[in-house]
Image 1 (spheres, rainbow, N blue to C red):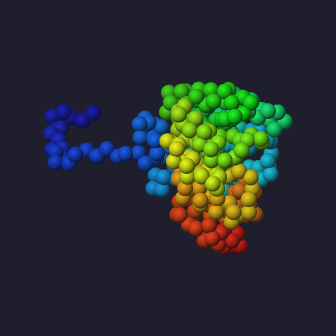
Image 2 (cartoon, rainbow, N blue to C red; image 1 turned 45 degrees about the vertical axis):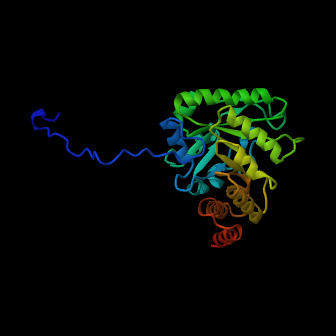
Image 3 (spheres, rainbow, N blue to C red; image 1 turned 60 degrees about the horizontal axis):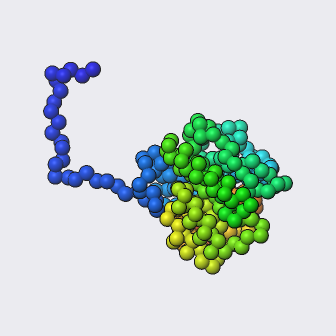
Amino acid sequence: MPDVDEMKEGKKYYTDVPQQTEGFFLKGSNALDWGMKNRLARIFNPKTGRTVMLAVDHGYFQGPTTGLERIDINILPLVPYADTLMLTRGILRSIVPPSVSQSIVLRVSGGTSILKELSNEEIAVDIEDSIRLNVCAMAVQVFIGGEYERQSIINMTKMVDIGTRYGIPTLAVTAVGKDMAKDARYFRLATRICAELGAHYIKTYYVEDGFETVTASCPVPIVMAGGKKLPELDALTMACRAVQEGAAGVDMGRNIFQSESPVAMIQAVKAVVHDNETPAKAFDLYNTLKNE
């Protein structure tokens, strides 16, 4: 303990310099608490305001998806190039090394498989497990227009309430049923409902006609879902258009881990998202890295 008699009076008060209060860089997030912002700043790069999320949670309803048969072999080499991993607690605990520094978005909804009605989900992970796993966000599927629409929305709002209590953001993932139109009107509806009910950011699909209206009408960040596997140049073009039209990054899975060269592909996606690289130049980068 310092000797009180030897303590010197402080002098450097800088009375002529007002204290600066930094505004938060993410859309719609400035009123959140410090812990929420800190976790979001680990998901989104504060320098670019964007993220490259690697989605590998498909097994929670699809089983061993092509490219995810061996996550230890196929996915771990991709981790250093991602900003964030989106996955289940089973894979996180059994395969991902605790030394990984990338932020974790944990899938917390579930309950059905591809053999049944997918919208019939419930909350499948307790908040205490999310805390134990030190995750930066919790992902909940929301089925606007689905058979169990109401249940999926309530799942999300419950996680928003519980997550806010402990400073963990909620990611709403919009799901599209087989018979639903994938157009801007639908995605404006789905993303706005999620944002109005408290989701901190939203994952949704890209549409060529009107995607900028989806991002403009949503008051919180949107990340683009990769969707089905596309040719590499097409996937890079879609990612480029999405961020140029207002998306705060991408959450891609199959278009990366099902690529002919996944390590090269994730680096090309990163160049598009964080460096504003053109699709053509990013595709050149992909081919260069693939052939090394």
